[in-house]
Image (cartoon, rainbow, N blue to C red):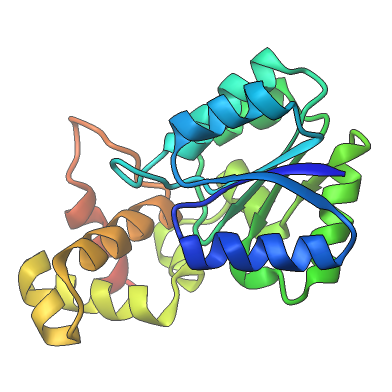
Length: 214
């Protein structure tokens, strides 16, 4: 199986490449952004593209948007979304329009290379692989308060400080992490609570209300 890996983390990308190579697969390219992913697939025509949903420059939905382009351009290409967060934007339409040869797994659920290899084989063969939490998220089940269980311990800490009225910069100081990391956590919180960008409501307020009503 020939694979293109797309993840902005060089360490993770190279680690996956080594593990997959040891498992008998061929990693034909490893890239760190969506544009490079599209170019690598056009050049190498792999069997499967492994794509992180959040990549430069905004670290929001570049990977998901690229996956949509790939599936619409290469009908037989397997695409495995491998992300640390749950996303609905773009992914819902992707699953509905191109369910064949598509997968979406959460990174923290891939406990060993065997899980990843099995998913890659299924996607290559035209199957669909969806993490149960992904299915629940895409179906939009549960109210905001119940969805708080989706948050990691760090995201829960960030939301708690948001509820205390702290700015992102103050949260970073309190947790000893940089501003960009805080912003990434906040964005992930909004995603996991199914709070898309809207001009009609304040996502930060709704997230804090969910915390206070838990």
